Image 1: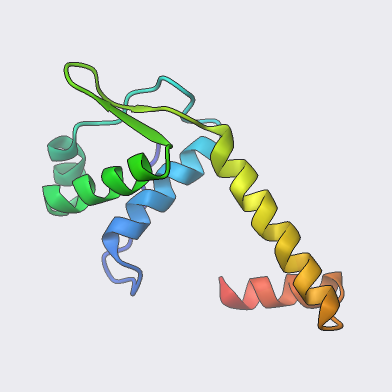
Image 2: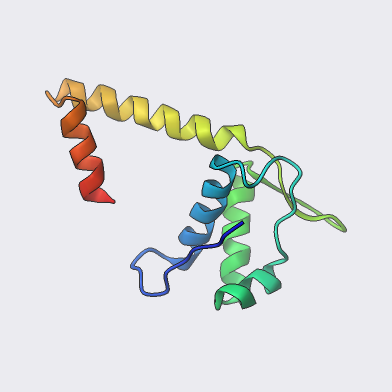
Length: 115
């Protein structure tokens, strides 16, 4: 899996690591049961503090996406949940946009502007 973080971004490094894992799951690069790198190893590779990686892993664990097991490390526990959550949010955005008179092109333009 390719880990992308931007040290110059305004987005916190922890959130960038969380997003990288979610992207990996969404792209099928990470599947249920896959092991993630140990926090110290990933921190060194990314040039961040080990606690930043641990905070990201904990956030993903709290969302039910990762599982921590002594002797087995950190593994992907649930992959489908991530995609379903994004699809649900997209549906809510579409419904909200329609209630405010926005069409598909308006919403696409808005999303492009925000990313």
